[in-house]
Every structure is written in C-alpha cells, then in structure tokens.
Length: 441
Image (tube, rainbow, N blue to C red; front, side, top):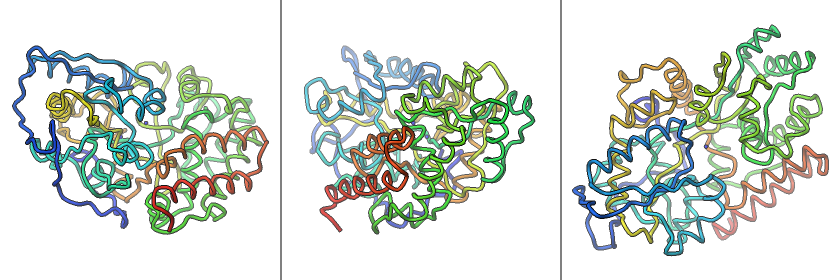
C-alpha cells in the first residue's frame, strides 16, 4: 500500500509524534562511519520488494537498479516477493543468514516498528546524516521512518527511508457513471445516492475485498469521517484509550453492514483478496474501488475505459502516509551497497520518473511532472496534506491488528457477528496488543 517537494508542503501535526533529530549509529557496525563513496566491483546487492513492474515504484526502481550497477560496478540480485510473503515471514528470515541487503517493508508500529524493537533492522541514523536524506523528507514522512525502543513511530532513530507517499481514495469508472447518469458525489449523502442508483440498475457499486486490506481501509475511512485529529493520535500512538463503542468505530462498522445489506458490497467480498477487487475494477465490472494510490500506475496501463478519482466526500481525513520504506536488515552483508541503492532511488531522475508514472515522489522536481494523470494524483494528495488530512492506517497500532480487522469484517459480512460484537472483539484485541507494547496505561 505513498511528496516532500511536490505534495507535502504542510507537515502533519500529530501532537504525540514528536520528531527528534539525527544521531545514533549505522553502517557495517556500530562504530563504523558511513561513506558515500562505494566500490561494488565483484559484489552483489540482494534486493527484495513487492511492487509490480508496471507500477510507478516498479518502473522507477528498475531504472534505479541500472543506475546503481553503472555507478558502483556491483550487481543486483532482485528477488521479487509478495506483500503477504514478506509480512508473514520477515521476523524469521531477517533473523537468519538469508536476510537480503535491502528490502521494501510496511511502515508503522506493527510492522517496521516491531522489527526495529526486536533488533532485526539496522539503525540508519549515520546513513541519513551522510547522505542527507532528512533534508529530502518532510516531517510527516519522517514520522514513519523513526521508531523508539518500543517500536512506536515518530521518535527515536531512523530504521527506514520512504521515497514515495501514498493515500487512499475512490477510483471511479467514468464510462459507467455516464452510462447510468450518476454524478460524482461531493458529500456522504451523495455517495449513498450514487451507490443506490447503481444498485437499482443491477450494478454492484463497490469492488471490495474482506480477505485483505481494501475493506479494512474503507472501514477506517468511515471512522475517520466522524473523527478528529486527537482521535487519530490516540488510536495510533496510545496517548489515550480508544472507545470501540464510540461514535467513530460504531458508525464505521454499522455502515459496512448496512451497505452490504443494501447490495452495495458483494456477498463474495468475504473471500476476495485485494487483487480480486482491483481486477474487478480493471475489467469494468465495478464502477468504484476504494483503495490506495499504489494502484494508479496499474490502472493507467490496464484499464481500458475512462476513469478518474475523488477523495472520500465530506471527510477531512483519509488513510495515508509515507509509502512503504526501504529497510536494511541488521544481518545484511552489504549495508554500504544498500545505502547507495536507497540514495539512488531518492535522486531527482528516479523521483521524476516515478512521478510521471503515477507515483507520489518525495523529492521530484515539480516542473518535471508532465503527465496529466500524475498531476491529478499528486493534486489530491496535496489537498489532504494542506488540511492535515493524513490519517495513517487502521492496522498500524499492533502487530496482529491487520489480521484481526480482516477477520472481524469477514465475520460481519458473513453474518456470524453483529456490528456491536465485532466492535467489542476488535476493541479487546486492539487493547491487548497495545498493552503488550506499552505495558499497559
């Protein structure tokens, strides 16, 4: 599931996330300094990431590999991995001699934060200072790059480097909207009216997946539509306890159930994965898909109809953050090569390439972004950041909450639990996870 120079002029004001300066250590050992001059002749960098070749990140990083090999003389051994594959096996792999030198990993307390607290990720403070990455990253992006000793984001040392931003929005099929006379909604009521009109015409409005992240992100968006910044801070950083029977989450869970009952969400969504939902939109079967900016490049390449995007109508915040981050495992054999590769992905040429292929780069030249679709993507993100509208993601607070949210929403859709029961269960699981991290309030 993503720009400092382009889209992050306004920093996210999260009171509990106090960003600290650089310090600490990195490099091949705690005592080594980091040099930006790297001789890679006869050496190999092992790289893992899970972006498709046609995505903005995939296009940009493939170009970065070529530039890296040219500059350093090293070879790159790229091993593509699935998001779920890395997420579920990272702790075991990174604690072994099979760890890569650099890999893309999900940001947040439950993922990168957890691995950092377990000593599995290398401290990047010295690399950040040597390469000056902090000068390219807005404060809001640094939130997901830093973790304290408990793995809570926003302070402490650098354990990851983002080179793109991301957020969640509606993708919509303009041809289907025109065919059925549906207007792009500008309020929550108009969104409901649009979905009702499609359903009346025999069309299921939303492409959805409850087996993976899309439905969880919609659920969180619904909560954000009733929330303020203090609620997000409490939810993400444990400043105060979160009431899962309160108006934010109660509204979200009940609305998901209501939308399924009205036929706005297919009953098949329980077993659908993110890929299934995205392909349903690509194939023109669903008029709307609520998901992340990481789909943008793929839709440009594969959707054979007119489409566009809009932010969730009437809401001041949306799920989003920096993109996933480059991390360097503590057991990586070639940390200096890893740092050099990360730096190349932060270069203007690679950042501009990403921006013109549907990504949200962190350090591109705004005048170099010429693609109209890319300007639209970045424009929506700017709208969010200008109003402090980045709400992070629902599964970040605890290591197990991603699976628990998916399971709870599956139970909601298949009718085995009521909205109230789902909220109670999720609230208990959330608090248990937070208590394990913090030792209790």
